[in-house]
Length: 114
Image 1: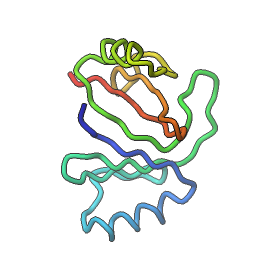
Image 2: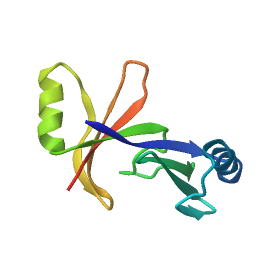
Image 3: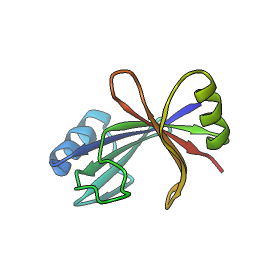
């Protein structure tokens, strides 16, 4: 697994984006009023506006995303090790992902690299 994304959800997209621009010393690779994306040493820092999740939507929660070769196989392996996958593998507009939580409740995304 390789860390590929840190997602931060906030109602202060402009302020948080400005902070990370100053902190990282780089311009964002993409920006809009609702989101900003920075790339730092190959890791995407994704700042996104909090939204109200509808039925079937993923929760707007801060999370880490890890790239895996086969998300279905990785989930099977993790479950055999006693970990619980909260949202099983599914196809989204960005690709195939699954979600679980660490013991502290932190959301973790597993996303399949193609």
